[in-house]
Length: 305
Image (cartoon, rainbow, N blue to C red; front, top):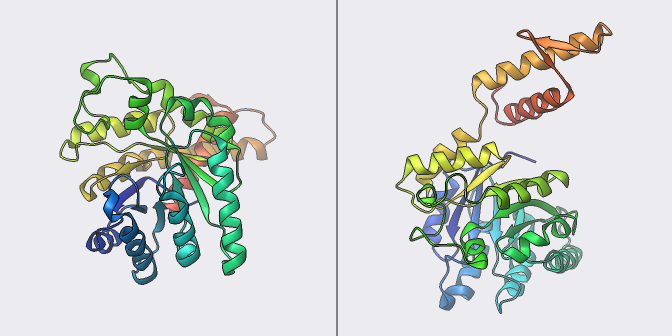
């Protein structure tokens, strides 16, 4: 799967923003039919999204669509209309508020029927947003629910509400956390999701950072999530993309170090030695696996000669 460092969320009903997003440096453009769309604009937003998918040049980016929850009057129709009319143009469908595997089972079966009916040759992927206590409790079952599943996404605002956590910022999306908790307030929840994602071959994506004017806070939040094993982060404003791409990209020093680890390990194998060392330090299989992952990411990002 291509890198998903930055996922730029764009309101589904505002067409002019779709064109602008298509030229951004985000790895993924997510056309949103859920939270950013007013209730009275849901039907029109669906039509706008389908039209944008069919008419715009997305410049090789992955394009996803977040539908409304499957427990609402809108979700099933989002899935049906987007799948039937533009399924061949969509990388994944993003399912919000996934509290149990049944949501993924339903979407999987629906998409199978749509693909068979329309003759779509590509497999439409799925992404599950984990944003409640119930969803986190059931996350292992969700992660194994379908071969279509590509990522697990942490929804911090709704998760906060589901456990009755204190609201410390207007958006509820990660700002000012350090003022009330000595550490990373969502360390356990995010780590639990990351562990489950990686155990099942999925990517783990962090929630957006609400205050797009606070670049220092954004970078701090992105660095922490990256350190916990997240592969990328949602963005709510184009100005956030550059910082997130930088945080989730290996540095030149990282790539050079990984190259030396792989070279030393290959040499040790060739010479029949069971151990290798780099800069006077022994390297083991875990180090080699990390180096390979980083090297592959650098290759996908065009950082290798």
